[in-house]
Image 1 (cartoon, helix red, strand yellow):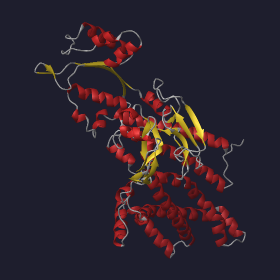
Image 2 (cartoon, rainbow, N blue to C red):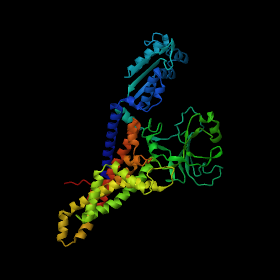
Image 3 (cartoon, rainbow, N blue to C red):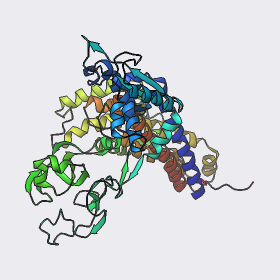
Image 4 (cartoon, helix red, strand yellow):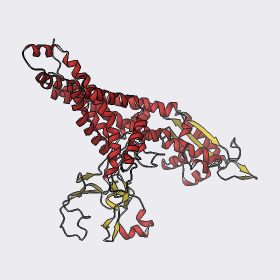
Length: 530
């Protein structure tokens, strides 16, 4: 079993890498890269050369290419000691003509070196001449020199996978920043829980200085009670769907209205706030420029997330998905068994009609139909995160469970009828066993194995949500995240969500096989010599 799991994991990892490679080829290689600006309102604000520079800066940010400006090149030469500040200033581009004829002699000399240096490394070098208006440089028309090189798909793939997990460390803050002694401190009494300095509330924590997060490990009264910021999962930063937020955070952070409580800040200042001080991250220089922050904080760990009362996207999707799955198994499994047991009976005929209805009618149609029926019965037909009523979960759960019930009924009935014609059933019957004993002791157990194999996948994929159901009932879940990203050409989210789905697929297959082997002792994953 152990060797089998390791082998399947390795195959699964290879499959995940290949899936992400294909997706990257599709979204980065075959899709017009200008489409990433379809929802970017800032592009329309840029004019002349600034517009071109903005696009290249964003393409670098989104992983399309490596972009280097002439100014960056001069700074690099200065840092390497090849030129001084006076030479760097003299070499700045001053030209107006596209051929650079009006550049200073120093500028012409170094722009030539700039071109030679980067072209020898496979870059393409562009020079945007000054845009003139009435003899003067127009707004956004300053001359621009830059070099760029498209990132190959293999480089992008390597960069993506090597950056998925980030471990916080005491060297995150630049060494030139004076922050005092760097290190990690373990305490049994969290200062945020014991603001007066007295050790009253037992609350273990690991606090960092020089790290990105102030609190690397801490405890509180919220499930799962022990939390960590030491290891961060990064699936890719969104630039359209949730601008500037990583895909993993988009799916997992809470939503809705702020939850305010009495917060005692590091300085001792107390106010009603939704700030979660355990999420504080380092922002260089923030304390110097803000009197408000100076009133609250003692160092530059000043950026915090807020506490919100509602579950995350994954949370909503999982709640609805797992309850609907349980409901489907509770109803579908026994109904399928009874349909097979009393084949051609009334229950079998009614169940067959239901299966045919669910299979024939488009899902959108029957979801709207059940939504109308539920509304006529007084049930909430729209999701409201501000509402405390649990009744708004009823219609989404029922709508999501109905097709699963039909599927389980159909396949359980089919598997059991197939088993009834097996040789072991005939042998048992000839041995004197009754049909009822054969049916419930042998046939049902064997027929249930394929159904049981799908349970891990059902549980795991409950987190991915249901696109149509969530759209119809306005559920703030994860179901529409991928389609929303595709619609907005948000490649980072597309890749991140695809990776999430791929990991769930691999885990569900492995866990399904393991569960099947546990249920049926005849199944073994051990290779035996023949």
